[in-house]
Length: 131
Image (tube, rainbow, N blue to C red; front, side):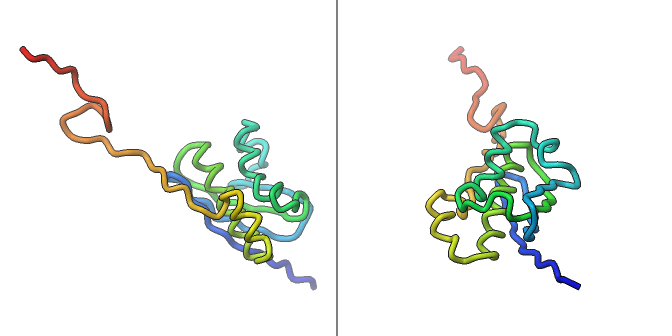
């Protein structure tokens, strides 16, 4: 019996976390048990998710299964992209320069700024009146 080897990668973006499993296959992408096109209906998010494959010219060579949670669609797409890039690194370490050149291995540190007390938002202030 042939053993299927899975390569793991964890990706994070904002408050989203994606656990990615990459195995050799036909290019099928499943996210949270749903089809890739159904989970990310916007072309912008789908392009972001597939970016590691386009950069490394490995489209259609791997099947991807993802569990992603937290955040919204944009954060989840970024987390999946980061996870796929890390998993591809496990597959072949020679892909590192290609992935690094496009910044796919760097975790995006931008986070939502917290709301401060005494004001309605992170930066917004209540209206000021001298009198």
